[in-house]
Length: 175
Image (tube, rainbow, N blue to C red):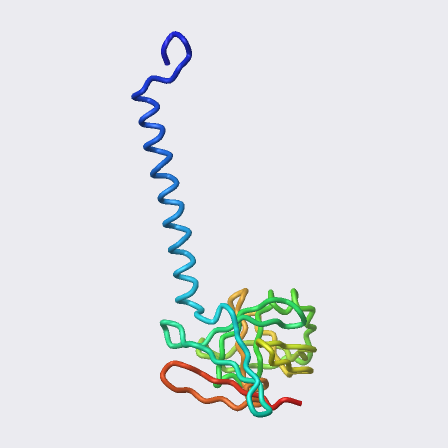
């Protein structure tokens, strides 16, 4: 600083330069994180269509070929991973606590990671877009990642589904 307390032009230039790059990097990081989350879950906004007596949802596969979708369990927001190899809806301990699910009978489940201890539960309400399912059999699996929910056949068995060219269509007859 000079005697009068004003920042010298060289220092001012360096400050502007640093602020410019900091803002630019923040914007790029924000845009990249948004782009990356869309690639991981391309079904950010589920759109339901009612056609000839049934409600349909179309899901796009993510870059790994999996189908993910946002939904709710007992009004708690979750991200579902659709899994036709899972007998029931399987939730992590963390999701179960947030959704108010209670542990029922203990049991064992065979997973890709081996045999794990699980507890049966009943999901009062599960929503996927405009599709609603009530009193859904499920399991609580403490070995799962904290935010994981596998949408298994206890739900998928109640809908018609077809896959073509990376698009999975779920349809449920309107009641």
